Length: 162
Image 1 (spheres, rainbow, N blue to C red):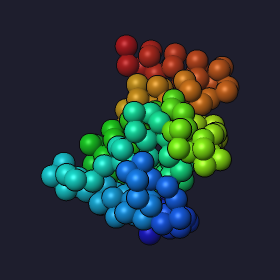
Image 2 (image 1 turned 90 degrees about the vertical axis):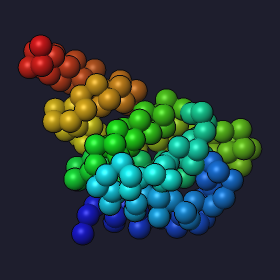
Image 3 (image 1 turned 90 degrees about the horizontal axis):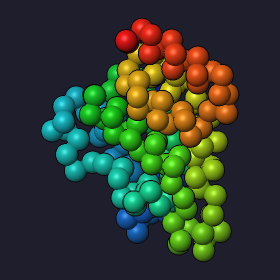
Image 4 (image 1 turned 120 degrees about the vertical axis):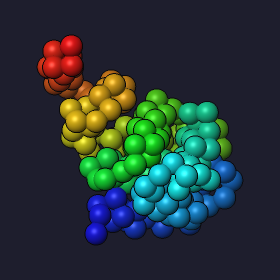
């Protein structure tokens, strides 16, 4: 059993609005395919782009997807999936609610995504140390309120890599 699968099962995705105009129910399969992928070929046709966000405009499914992706970063992921999740996390913390979400009473989706990332911030620091350092720091710049910690990690990792 994997934490990412448990996080995925915590929500009724069918009750959430998706960027593609449907309910979020199809995201369970998309996440499942991405989490199980062992090659790029296995990810073809399964993406979170234009579902969680469209051009950094966020939809209701976005903050619910954050803990799934953060949990997955601690698991065995194909490199392309790891990069996809990190890219999506950056879009989510830097985005803003789509106009339709504002009208539906969800104007704070970016803040919700940031709060969700902060709950699992240690996963991004682990990624910075052992994975895609710059992608992790790109997200941490938006979410970590502890500037001293961020600066410390940056300096130690820069010295190690440089």
